[in-house]
Image (tube, rainbow, N blue to C red; front, side):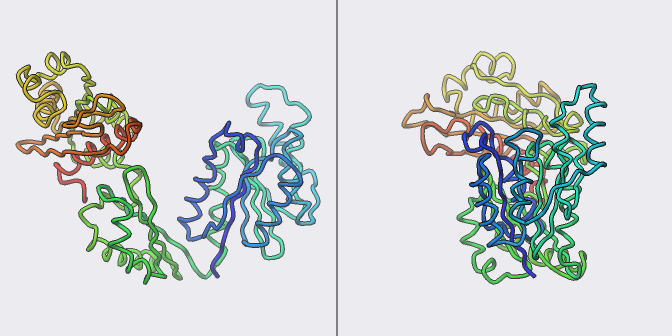
Amino acid sequence: MKHTAEILCVGTELLLGDILNTNAKFLSNELAAIGIDVYNQSVVGDNHDRLKAAIELALSRVDILITSGGLGPTLDDITKETVCEVLGSNLVYDESVKENIISFFKRRGRPMTENNLKQALVPEDGEVLYNENGTAPGLLVRKNGKLVFMLPGPPREIEPLFVKMVLPILKNINPDRVLVSKNINIFGMGESSVEALLKPLMESSDNPTVAPYAKDGEVLLRVTASAATESQASALIDGKIDEIRKFVGEYIYGIDENSLQRAVVERFTKRGLTLSTAESCTGGYVSKRITEIPGASAMFGCGVCSYSNEIKEKVLGVRHETLEKYGAVSPQTADEMASGVMKLSGSDVSVSVTGIAGPDGGTDEKPVGLVYICAKFKDKTMSETLNLGRTKNERQFVQYLAASSAIALALKITGEFNA
C-alpha cells in the first residue's frame, strides 16, 4: 500500500515570517527518503477554528498527518487539544511524562511553573514519543486507518525525535515490505538538463522510482525501491544507479554524499592529502565550508583571503606585472594565486578563486559573475572559467557557486570527483 502524508506546521510566528520554517523542509526530506509522498504542506496560526479546519482537511486526503508546534505550556499551544477534538479523543495526565518534565527542570536548576504540567496531558488512546531535548513529548494517535503524529516545534527537538521515534514506526507501516533510498549527488549540470536526459528513464521507473531535487548549484536524484528485504531493495537501486551513470556519470560526485565539502574532507583525509586555498571574490567562503566539516584539520592547511592586489603580491607572490597586464580577475592571476598558496602552505593541493561577485565592478569585458578558478596538484594544473551572473544582485549566489566549483575542482584534479 502506498502511503501519503501531509505536514501541518502550527504557529503564528511562522505566518508572520519571524521564524524560518525549517521543519517542513526537514520532514519532507525524511519522508521522501522512505518513499512516503508528501502531497501538501500547510502553515496555520494559533487559532482554534483555522487549525481544526486544517486538520480535518488533511485527514480527508492523506493517511498520515504530521504536525509540528503548538505542544508547549502556554494558552496558545492548542495542537493536541484540537487534534483530539477532531479525532474524538480525550486528554489524560500521564504520570511518566509529568515526572520527565519535573526532572528536566531539576537537571537545569530552573524553577518550574505550574503551566508546564499542561505538557503531561496526552491522548488516552495515543502513544507518547519521548522527547530527550525538551519538555513537550511527541504524540501519536492511530485512528480510523490514519496516523497522526504531533511533534514539538523547535528544530533541535523535532529532528532527533523524528529520527529516533517516528522513522522506525513509519518504516514498519507495511511489515512485509521495506523501503530503501539512495541519493545521487550531481554537480556541474542543471536540473533541467538532468531531467531532459533522464526523462524517459524516470517516466518508465516505478520500482525503483527516480526523483530529481534541485539544490543551490547542484542536483540530487533520489532513487527509492520497495522490496521484501533491504538487500533486495538495495540491489534494485544499485542497478538503477548503474543505468543513470550511463547518462550523467561524469557529473556524479557521490552517492549519499552530504556535500561537496564533506566529500573533499573525507576523501583527502583518507588519501593523506592536504589542501590550501587562495580566495578573492569568495571572501574565505571556500575555507569556511571546508572547515565546517568535523575532521577538516587533518587535511586543511591554510586559507588566504586576498582581496587587495597588495596582499596578492606580498603574501601569495602574484607578480606585479601579471596584475598590471591581465588584472586581478584573470586566469593568469588565479594560476599564480594557486601556486603562491601552495608554496606558502606546503600543501599537496591548492585551489584559487578570483572574480567579480557584484553587484558593482563589472564591465562589458568582465561582467558581474565572471569567475576564474585554478587548482594545482603535483605537476598538474586545472583551470575553469565560470559565468555565474544572471542579475546584478546575486552576490551571495555567485560566491556560493564559485566556492562549490572550487571545491569540485580540487576533487577533479586529484581524481576524487567520481570516486
